Length: 110
Length: 118
Image 1 (tube, chains in turn purple, blue):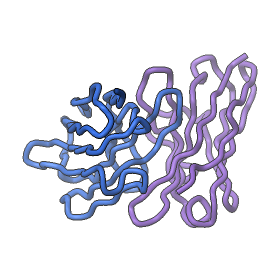
Image 2 (spheres, each protein chain N blue to C red; image 1 turned 90 degrees about the vertical axis):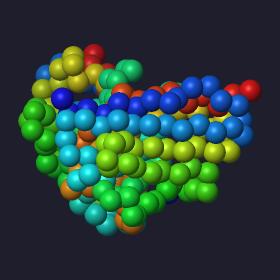
Image 3 (tube, rainbow over the protein chains, first blue to last red; image 1 turned 180 degrees about the horizontal axis):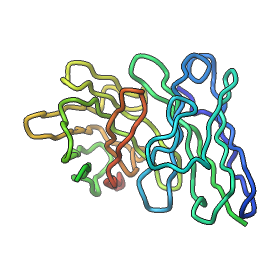
Image 4 (cartoon, rainbow over the protein chains, first blue to last red; image 1 turned 90 degrees about the horizontal axis):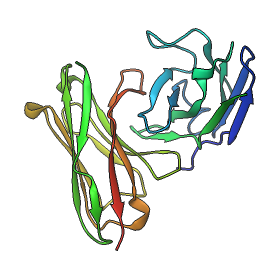
C-alpha cells in the first residue's frame, strides 16, 4: 500500500481559504467514500476533523470542509486562523480492514 | 474520561522485542475495533494493524506482517502490540486508536516512543 499523495506545504493569510489535496488510487480513495482528515499539532496526537469525505465530528468548526472527486479528496479550511497552523493528514479505507494515510501537509498561517 | 493511554515504549536493539500496551477508559472497549498507527520521527502516519472488537479478525500492514502481533483483552480494557525482530525503521511513536463505525479513527492516545538502535 503506497501512501496517498499530499502537498508538503500550504500557506495562507488569516481569513483566507486554503485547500489541501489528497490523491490516491482506484483501490482506495476512488473506491470508498471513507476518506477522513486529521489535524496534528506538534507533539500532539492526531485529531479527527472530517470523516466519510465531508462530515464533521461534533465540536469541529464548520470552517473545515471536505470533498472528493475520483481518486482525489480535498480538505478546505476557510477563514484561516492562527490555531489552524498544524500538520494535516488524509486517510482512506483501502478494503479488508486496512487503511492508508497521506504523506501529510504542513499548513502555515502567514 | 474517555481516553487511551499507551505504555511500553523504549530503547531496544535491532532484532529485539518489545510489547506495547494501550489502556482504554471511559467507553465500552469491547464495542470497538482498534488499531495501532505509528509515526517515524519527522514523518507521516502509517497504519500498522487492526483488530476487531471480539479479537477474532486481525490484519497487518505488509511492513510488519510476520513480526508484529496485535491482541486485546476486553476484560482488562486493554490493547497490545507484540513487536519482534525489530528494525531501525520501526523507530516511531506508536499510537493506539479507536475505530469508528464509519471506518476512521475517532479517538487517539498520546503515543509511546519506540527507538530501535544499537
